[in-house]
Length: 77
Image (tube, rainbow, N blue to C red):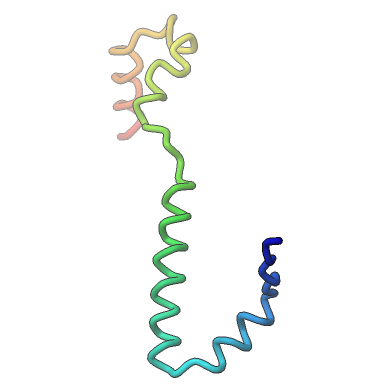
């Protein structure tokens, strides 16, 4: 029969950290930081700004682009 590993709790990890030498604690921070950065990077959106192309095009169908730009420029003065 296979032995099951005991489940470690958060407090178990914390007490283990306290028993490490300072340089080992720093190494642990580096490892945790690298893994966290990797996890966060994987969670980042996979979308690109180009996916927004054409969004809202129906709103602008009846608008003359040159006239719109000219009116905007006039409002800057």
